[in-house]
Image 1 (tube, rainbow, N blue to C red):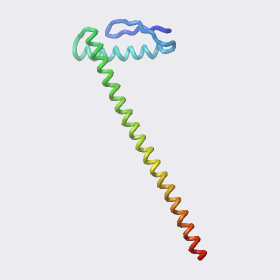
Image 2 (image 1 turned 90 degrees about the horizontal axis):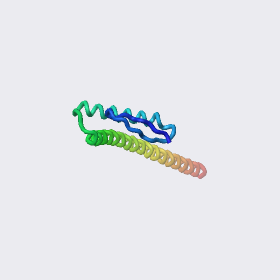
Image 3 (image 1 turned 30 degrees about the horizontal axis):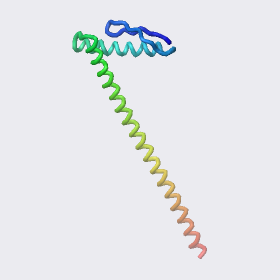
Image 4 (image 1 turned 120 degrees about the horizontal axis):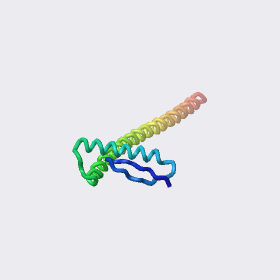
Length: 111
């Protein structure tokens, strides 16, 4: 198991991760450190526990927005799929009606 040192708000933390995930974990740590830095710049110095809560809430808010966008995209995709299914059903019904009309026309010609 690999380990990566991430620095957040000037403090180093040794974090374990799966082999091959070191770069990804380092990027995540840098992102969290950046967001923490933005908060400290906006509200001033705060203790680590309060900063942890604030950064967690900020990240949860970002994640919530992404989930909302994903749900909207899924709903739109479902609407498109439903419309395509309705159009396919309509097309099949039209084909069936056309066949019935042709059958009626043939019977009228034979009579």
